[in-house]
Amino acid sequence: MIAIGCDHAGIDLKPHVIAVLEEMGLPYQDFGTFTRESVDYPVYGELAARAVASGECDRGIVMCGTGVGIGIAANKVRGVRCAICSDCYSAKMSREHNDANMLALGARVVGSELAKMILRVWLTSQFDGERHARRVGQITTLDQGGTLKP
Ligand code: RB5
Image (cartoon, rainbow, N blue to C red; front, side):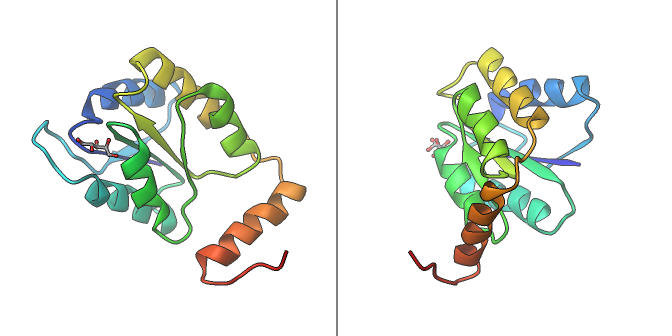
């Protein structure tokens, strides 16, 4: 199950994201927003992020104007690693190296076709593990309030 969340600025990307999920046969849960009325992106970033962090959803896609605000908000939820991407290379690496469990896209930054390409790459790339697992483990330590030794 894929969680979807967006604000009013990200909403134009939503049908394109849904089209990719449907084309790939992936079920999704849409946490809103559902209209172009101005809303606060942290609210929808949190809804999608909590669904991922709780295990209710396997991964999450969030969208706002830049992807930055909603991505930062999602990353405040413990257990979430949200990659803010506007290119395919970063999207692929965010899965292979960072085991990103959420993707943030900016509707005012990327066009719909690029967004779909980024999403397909992100959804089909796998975590490489090994040395990257150690580093992701260190991110988890920080996420849980711990500190790292150099
Ligand atoms: C809304 O105007 C805009 O600030 C929001 O969508 C997002 O881009 C924030 O990071």
